[in-house]
Image 1 (cartoon, helix red, strand yellow):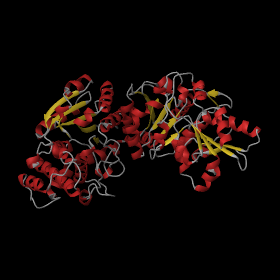
Image 2 (cartoon, one colour):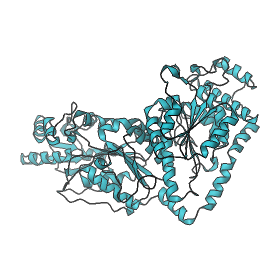
Image 3 (cartoon, one colour):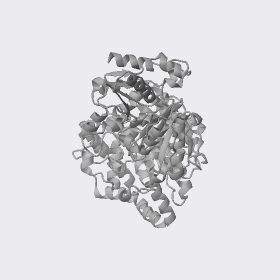
Image 4 (cartoon, one colour):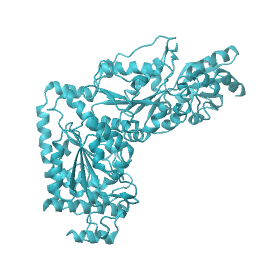
Length: 633
């Protein structure tokens, strides 16, 4: 009886939040409240120590369940007050429309785009498995729960992620599928007819089913899933908008308030005062807090059990000393692709820091992302994501938010389009993920337009909180990595397929930390050439010719536009100065360069199939064209 009152309190609380905000999603929270109450008794969490490493992770893939998330956090005792619930979806509140990591106490990861949370949960489970391997099963023994719905499982990212979870037999992963057979447009049968059970069995999951409104049935399958040697899917058959009076089971409850009349009728049918809102009895609040009390006890026991050696390992992972890294150096005049130098850099970091973990979307030999003398996951740090860029990005978000590790993931730059949603979420969260994007331009060559990135640099430079590095050579690549290690945000390394000459100038971490710096200086320049990546060498060659023609030329390398934008005006003026004298050179669409430059030498359309060096000339990214533009300037 108490569980039913707890569940009904949750239902009404969520409906009140949406009604007061006149915005939100009451249907899924009301449908999942019975599952949430039983799950509370299984979760191992501690609101008083929310960063406890061995806590269970609870991910709501459907961010439209945010009202349920916040209501539970309040009832469990996290720093989410009743007033916060009343301010649901209001500007500046702790309870935004979709859960946001770092904004609301107890939220493990930012969710919203459907399917992302499923892949995030796989990332958490992978991080947990590896942590268990290096710290011990007595230290890491928690589970990862993920609540998802029909929309999450329709999105392709969930298929990719669950395929990998099944392959690795992630027995610490439990997906709870809110199978209410409703989407925004109506019943799921209008667009979905596959056998979800068979799909997950084929992917290597144990699959359980329950009546999502029968407390004993829910408890039984949760107990069974916790004992499984495989990842588990629990299909909870639920009714959207459960107990929402005349609107129970209707798709109309998904994304709109119930309305005052329906809400009052719902309260009355469940035995609540129809004229009161946000009512939580002391007994029910205590019942929710008691349901997770065992986690608080377990947390203290766990902390007391840690040996000094384990404490030291955990501290080293949380707070690494990157000054110990012995970065490689490269001789001037050598020819080396930045994808190759980056591989040496990753290995140098890995030798000193045990928290670097990652891999590629089946392109490791091309991306140069394999960590040498290191085993494959789960025993080692080499991750093989397979051809799954979409899930790879979101999995790395989960690994990053786990807290112990710095994940990296790699693919060809043109395929970063598949990763954009998860990169965007990482940027919203300021999660530390490294993206290694190689084959950065038309220099890819014969593979042609489908494999030659054009607009991607502009896209990712437009993304707030993401630092995009395109190094000019191997040594600048080192400095970029040194800077990125100190950033509390995601970083992307856009790297060449073709060999680039190691330039003769000296470059330091401090120079790169400003985003742009002068490579070649003439006082009072007639023209300023600014470039990134492979085009920096072209700028230097152009400057040599122009100086022989009697012109004063400054050459600027800008490996990270985002860092440059953070500098004060005095520094920016000292580097670029007069826009009317500035020409930007980059083998990309380059529309963002017009804030700095009068002219941009770049790509006006897509690429073509041919030898890389010929393509640069064909598309005018050449010395001859540069000299023509200077003459016109």
